[in-house]
Image (cartoon, rainbow, N blue to C red; front, side, top):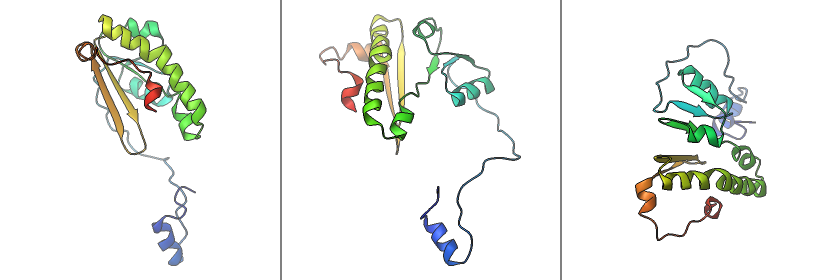
Length: 156
């Protein structure tokens, strides 16, 4: 069903050829060498993030607030709990999960940034057409003292 109704399949069917119904990623091949990313630790339960980190010899840890606070150097935390809810079009559950992430993770990270416990935060949020990136430092957070803090869910 992946290519159902695609112009290439319509043309193939008019030519009497079988339609393309999927792509199979299996068999031989060589995994290219992965570049070492700019962080020293990955915190995630995502199988993809975990395996890519291990392939580049980066330490992998579960996401806990203690592991984030105790990190020296740079780290990547991968939160994937909203993705399946968005894929399933379960918007009420997605909004609740976003509020939970905001309350349990993003607000404490923002507070740690204000205190100087965390030096820099970068958020990369994939979307349908592009990935949005947000970069916060203590300096740019403190310069926005006149803005009222809003939960992340208000932007959804």
